[in-house]
Amino acid sequence: MTGAVVVNYGGAADTVACVASLLAADPRPELVVVVENGSADDSAERLTAWVRVLPEPGRVLREGALDEADRAWLAATGGGTRVALLLAVRNHGFGGGVNAGWRVLRTVDTLTHVLLINNDATVARDFLGLLLEAMRDEGVGIATGTVRYAPPREGVWFAGGTYRWTQCRGVHLTEGAGSARDVTFVTGCLMLVRAGVMDRLDGLPDCYFLYQEDTEFCLRVRAVGYRLRYAPASVVFHKVSASAGLRRTSPRSAFLGARNRLWFARRNLGGTQRVVAIPNVLADEVGRALGALTRGDGAVAAAVARGMMAGLFGSWNRERGPGGAVVGRT
Image (tube, rainbow, N blue to C red; front, side, top):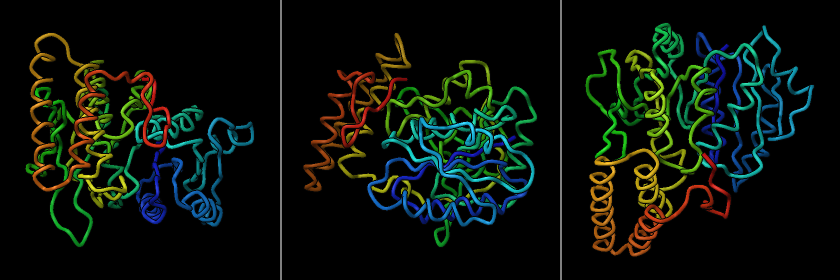
C-alpha cells in the first residue's frame, strides 16, 4: 500500500487542489493523510468541513489520540482512496509535520511506500506509477520525478539534485530532465520513500523546523546503503514558495536558512569536511546579510546574524521555533 502525507500550514485551498489531483491519479495512493500543522488561520475549520463531504467521506483524527475505531478505519482496504485529516497539536515545522502524518500511516500493516508531496503541488495522472516502477529496484530508497513550475509559469524547478557538502545544501538541477539516473539529493517537494527506510531512520529529522531536513534525510538514506533515483517522466507542478507562506527574503526564512546550514554541518560533517564547510557557509551568510543591508533591509540582516549565532552555538535538542514551539529532538 502507498500512503501519502500532505502537510498544510495556512494553505487550505492549495491543499484541497493537491489532494484532488492525487485522487485523480492512476494509480493513486490508497490512503492520504493531510496534516493540519497548527495553522494560524481558519485552515483547520475549512479542511474539516471539506474532508467530511468528499465522495468517500474522510475522517478527522487528532494527533496523539487515535482510538481503535480510527485504527480500524485506517486499516480498511478496498474501494476508493481514503483521506484522513490529522489535526496537529502545534506547528511542528515541515519535518515534524511529515513525521506526524507518517506515524499515522505506519499503523497500517500493509504500508509499503510513503509519498511526501508539498501541499502547493499538483500531480500528472501517471506520476505515481512511474515512481513505483523506479522503486522496483530494491536498492532504491527514494524515487522522485520532475517538478515543473505551476502554470502560468513555465520551466523546470527540479530535475534531480546534487548534494554539495562544501555548501551544506542540496542543489536543484534543471537540465537533463530526459534522463533517468541516480542522484545525491531529492527535494522534499516530491519523494516516494520505501516504508522500511522511513522506519529505519525514524522519519525525517525534525529539528530544523523548515529547510535542510530533506538534505539530511537524503544523506542518511544513502549512508544506510540505499540509492536515490530520478524518474524524469513522473511530473508534478509546484507553486514555488507558496507552501512556506512567506517570501524567501523574510526575516524568519533568513534566520532559519543561516542557522540550519550550520546545524547541518555540525550534525553531519566531521574532520576536514566540517573545517571547510563552516567557513564557506559563514562567508555566504555574511554576504547575504551585507546584501540585505545594502537594500536597506536591516531586519533580514539581523535575522541572518542571529541565525549564524544559533547555528554555531545553539542546540537542536532544546531550540524553539517560531511561536515558541519546540523544534524537535532528532
